[in-house]
Image 1 (cartoon, rainbow, N blue to C red):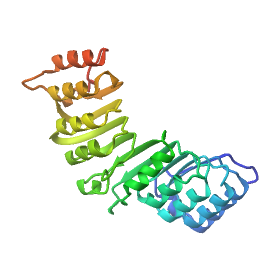
Image 2 (cartoon, one colour):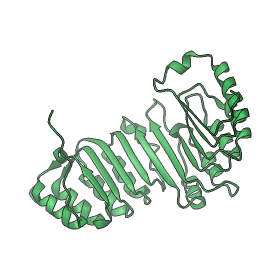
Image 3 (cartoon, helix red, strand yellow):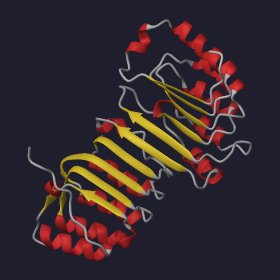
Image 4 (cartoon, helix red, strand yellow):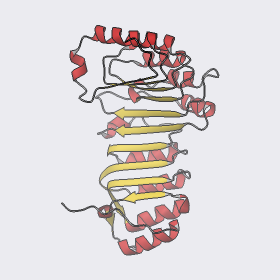
Length: 290
């Protein structure tokens, strides 16, 4: 590679084929690219990248790297920490929750580090507990970068997977649940996520989601966007949810089949109430029967 690069993306879609190549040759080739290219943007997912290869990256891109997305199983929290310490101009960071640590957040909060604009974290159920992150570390980051957008993408399948999450004041702004979300998690969100702006829930299971949503509405006054997929919610529950948030709720998406008529409100009454509260015409999302 004789030409310098500003951006490099290595994404393994199959998440397996990269692991059949020689790891040493791969990281050596990557090191050469780092040596010759003052990268501004780097995206590497599911490749054999390991901690030693990040050492070279940190030394060669310390003043140029602004955008980093890295989710590789051979990376450790120490490797990501070393990179964060070396790249003080980093503005956007996307990583796996498994490499998150108090030390990493404190490094990103250092006075020598520029304000972080975006932190995107993916949480997967990988058969091991997610790391515990302290309230002090999160608040240090929020104080250092007050306008930061923190996105958490949750793909957890079991209730136990959530045990390490939402235990303290968590400055997340955008929260996406890709799998089933237990009711207990919603109660935690209401208590620990005061900066929440967007909430997307793909599924909630057989239980009604009313109380959990109302808890979020009462405590997350900055909430502006809500999307609900395969959930059960009474019409009166949704009406109360919208009433609590008022017309500050800019976007509301919910499947029509998720709404359950109750003695206080049916679907037609709900549509009229929500439209009135939002100050614009609103209807639930139609789901075709294939």
